Image (cartoon, rainbow, N blue to C red; front, side, top):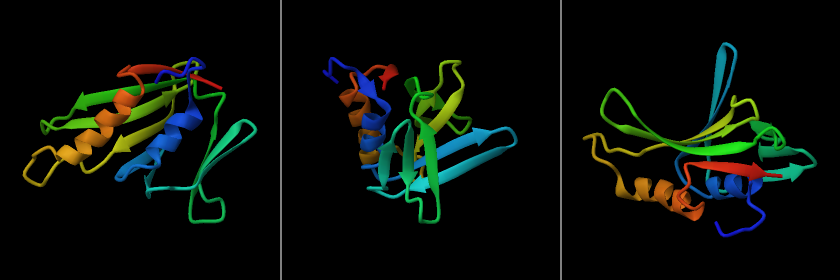
Length: 137
């Protein structure tokens, strides 16, 4: 992005929720919550907290935007030969706050789905093809 103020958590998440086939995951000691996002999932920020999802609906997630200091675009190889694509948000102590997983990247025959890969690559390009982005509040 060519924004002199830098990228914010809000900007990046707003772009993510416009996409199909993404899932949030949040890990705590002993548990992982996974939520498949629907395109145009509700999102708002009030003071220091972002809310992803509808507070009156079946689920929602609160994220302290001051804690999300950095976003990393990550591509990693798995044992089955496939690559996994995600964006991970970290705090100032480099602890994972939130993870966005890109789903449905391969066919049953293990072929990359071009449209799915393009979703990830377009977002990566929009943010300057930087693997790590320092987030501003």
